[in-house]
Each structure stands twice: as C-alpha cells, then as structure tokens.
Amino acid sequence: MLTTTTTKVLEPGDLDVALAVLDRDPVANAFVAARVQVAGLDPWRLGGEMWGWYAGGRLESLCYAGANLVPICAGPEAVRAFADRARRSGRRCSSIVGPSEATAELWSLLEPHWGPAREVRPHQPLMVTRGMPADVAPDPFVRRVRKDEMDLIMPACVAMFTEEVGVSPLAGDGGLLYQARVAELVGSGRSFARLENGRVVFKAEIGAATARACQIQGVWVAPEHRGRGLSVTGMAAVLRHALEEVSPVVSLYVNDYNTAARAAYRRVGFEEVGAFMSVLF
Image (tube, rainbow, N blue to C red):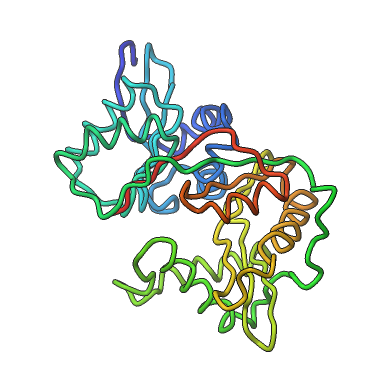
C-alpha cells in the first residue's frame, strides 16, 4: 500500500483515477486528456508512459513522458519527483511543455543534466473562449479538409511547423510521423482550411478534443496573404465548428511575442486565463 509520497508508471487499471486528475483542469490538460481517453494508459498505444505521483496513497499528480514531457497538476514536491525519474531515464522527449510554473521548476531541475535547450519559451498565454464573437463573421470559405486533399494541406502544415518550431517536421524519419498526425486530423474532420487556386491560404486544426474542452492549433496564414484579416475570420469559422460540434470550451496557447496572433485571437473573443511554457530541444 502506498502510504507516503512515491511515483510509479501507471498501468491500464489506473485509468479512472488518472482521468480524475486530468479532469481537475480540463482546459490546461486537454492535450493529454484527449490522448488518454483514446489510448488509455498502455504505453505502446499512448505513445509514452504516464507517471503518477502519490501522497498518502492518493494519486495527486501526473507527468506524461512521451514525445513531450508534460507535468500535470504538479506542485513542487511532485515536480521534484518527476525530475528525478526523468533524469534517471534520460531525455527521450523533443520538448517539455505545460503550465508555466510547474514547467519552469521542472526545467530548472533538469537543465543541468539535459541542457542546453535549443530554445526556451517561458511565457505562452493560454487563451479560452466559450462563445462566438458578435461582430466577426466567420469566413464562409473555410471548410474541412478532405482526405483527397492531403497533397494540398501537407505543404502548409510543414511551413507552419517549420516557422513555429524552427526545424522541419520532415527531419529524422522523413516526416512519416508528422504526415500520419496530419492524416489523423484530416480523417477525423478536425483540419480546416481556405483554399484559393488550389493553394492553402489559411489553415488551423482542432488538435485535442474532449467533451469538456478542445484546443485549436496550427493556425497559419500563407505569407503572401497576411494583412488581409484572414486569421480573424478564419479563426471565427474554426471556432464555430469547435463550439457546435466538439466542446463548450475552446482553448489555445500562443507565443507571447506573437502580438499579431494574440490580437487576432482577442478579436474573436479569446481571453488569457493562464500561461504555458515550452522547452524545445
């Protein structure tokens, strides 16, 4: 019996208690919660391990350890425990991302062993909305990307990722994993775009979705079309789909230095409710 603080790798039988922890903050935890709801806690299906931190026999905090390292509902003691486990395991993730306070503490403990990072983004506003803007008409030309349009959406996705992250998603495995992820979003009806003359001029995806909250990601406007207001009307169109078909709360997080994007999101009703932090390797 777990009577003191300890950590362990969660097993499929721990699913209900893990979901209860994730449900404490359905907005901040949407990314991990969506994965767990689909894949459970089997590491092979989940794409990584889920670590649990227990206090007095009760599961209090989680840390997803896959392609990303993500602290969840983690206070200082849990963060230290997760840092110890991560240090012993060695770095296998391409980023650390999560609520800014816990992520900053986790990185401070891991940096002497894993550093230096390629880039640290210490403050990425987490923004939320629960309704449509009254004064912005959704772009009528933004629609779901069809499965037979993968050859059109992929170049835009690659351009967005490279611009946002600073490296191409085609490196390493030639883009197989990234292409599979794009295909998954297209196949599930969560990829949206405006096309003009066979080219994507705006795109965005509903990247994580639960019954309580979803997260928009990958917002991108082709460089030659920027300044036309497409990000505002395009986001309004994606937001309408998200609110009507996915969940009552829609979120996203954005780099604090991207003032144009933050202004566009505020224009369609998003408000800042917290902050994330990302450490990129």
